[in-house]
Picture 1 (tube, one colour):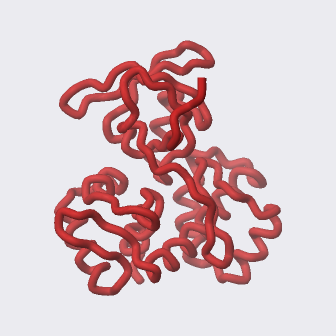
Picture 2 (cartoon, rainbow, N blue to C red):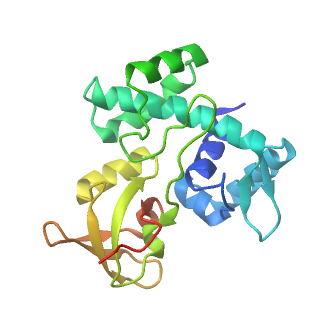
Length: 221
């Protein structure tokens, strides 16, 4: 399987394609590529039995697609965790390294790495780490972009993307931060949020807001 096909499986997995249908637009924003390119690759993955897709009805991973995606994501996120926790990499720098390492990791090495790290459940940017049997905990797939003006949410995870993580580090948005959504600017403009721990207001780009996941259920007062 080509690295590009693997990237598609991983992004569909991250967007929740193992549980629900995701759109071409979500994949396009996640990968930073044109929607037309997404359509072409989804057709190929459908022919290979890795995704299911009906026109205008979204895209989901098949059981075989989930199996492949979970294995790729597991190895990638184990290496991210090792690089941050044991080699003290910055979270913004681990993705390119893990991308290389995951393709040269046997199942035996992944099992040993998992044991060495004491079986972590989540990677440094909040993504779930599947177990060796392919099972994984449920996580929220609700986007910051979908939060209502005036709503308070918790930042639970970031999409696994080097440019995104670098951008969020520069903006100052932290994982697990509690923020209040102030305003969605029109015409695909940014989202203005207020960090409740320091009263700082941040402007989050339209694209980034579609790559940030928040709590699924409303927060209790």
